Length: 264
Image 1: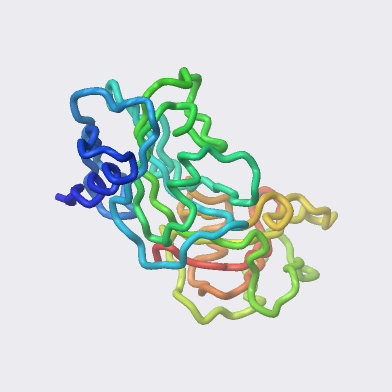
Image 2 (image 1 turned 90 degrees about the vertical axis):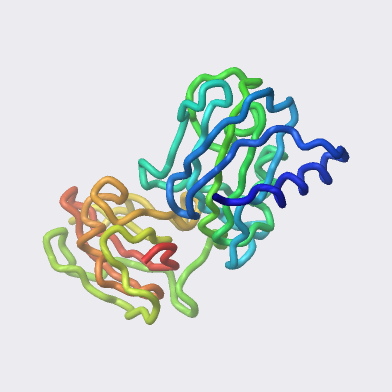
């Protein structure tokens, strides 16, 4: 069982009180859907943040796109309101000056990749950016467990390389092409990867989508339900730091820069 005393002491110090308000108990390792037990009593009206597990990676910084897995529960009945562990699509929090609740700022800014953070507070603050967890009253007490996968610059790309462009002659049915060989970890089915990508319609070559233009790096899990069609086959066996082009059954051709692998 993970000990919560350091988190409780931190909260007591930060709130200027010697009595720690009740906090949920969270079990399970980073990257795995947490087990959450809600204590008796009331959580209070002020959002509170506690680091349950400090990470060892790069700390997030201003301007980053922070990718995180999130589990959100109701305090009153412990019902799940949102879980990216089931969808395999981590959320992205952009630290570029756009509106961000004070609670979420405390939860993610300056946190090392690999950190597990607990956030308790009213829905108006805990739902955070772009977390459509349903029509909840803003004062509804919620619990969020946030696994910070990492913070990445919005224009993260392979060092010294121009932006990706689809190679000529690549069709949706053609085998994947390695355009730049990577030297990092090898991707396997089920890996959680951080990528930048460009997608074009075939055969017109018209731009269909681009992470460089729509917010920055994105994270996907290489499973049929966690990534776009064609990605598992196109990226499996590739390495971090590489660039690969492949087609999809939808008639789209992708060029993907593999920025990082969180779980390989």
